[in-house]
Length: 385
Image 1 (cartoon, rainbow, N blue to C red):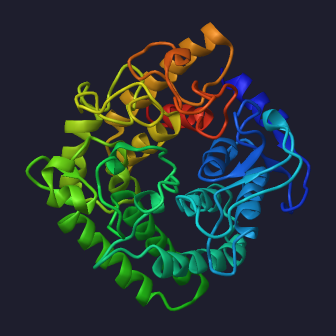
Image 2 (image 1 turned 30 degrees about the vertical axis):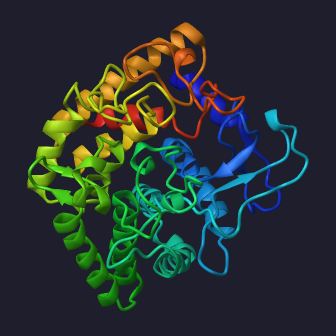
Image 3 (image 1 turned 60 degrees about the vertical axis):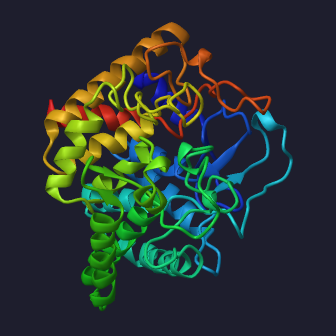
């Protein structure tokens, strides 16, 4: 399976062409909307190839930030000609649809692996401009940040048709994922500022403010769960959405909060620890179903969950999660000969999982790289087993 995935990375890499300065890697040849680059898919791809081809990994990050708008917005998917779509023009949304800003995590990994700190000179500016964009365009009422899922339902969070937004009223309300992601931007901005000899105090202050807000205002101590602010205030709007793990991924959660979350949710077979982990909606949640982000398993999210465990020295949990997900993916590869966009979290066949019933694309894409950092997952597993 991993050999097949490596070959897929190679065949899905295209020569440099506008708007990319370097060779670029697409989401996968089987993506139902055709050739595309970007969103958080490219971060998962970068993490997957980092240890095998660090130069290529860096090029994907530089391709991503090169298309940053003057406002500081980084675009979501950049749709390229060709592929299943038959598209003959290049298109991307330059105003209303960003994407989860997790690219600095991959940049940190690249620097740690290669020791190449000079790249900070190219990445620091885009990081600071993206922070400014979030402050100017995604600042929530009071404190925290939001994704436009709550206003436009354009799924800027990367979690299309997520259960969190089914009943909530429109408004600039703090989302647990967006707030955790921006917290991480400030945390890394402080670290990079120190390394470059720039003032870091403001970034540290905002980091600490957001950490306090996440721990105090987006957390319900009674059940040990992180929620969006509307669900904290109204228990009827609470759901077991896997996006609740982002405070652990970014390190915003306390050790006590993290251990409780790992034991009670990530390792609970009635919640996220399903036959193919992680279920994107907890199995015991009334809205759990095998449809897109409403219950199936995405290996990218499994990767982040394992990484969250390692952040809090819970290698025991990360090992269980990775082993189960890699084995489940390998079984489906042996049966179908392909890598799937997402998987049946209860161990069924991906072909039986619904994608978007209201569209003509109602099954997961095949040969999908963007959410399958399986090589990175295997390396992580080897490091802790």
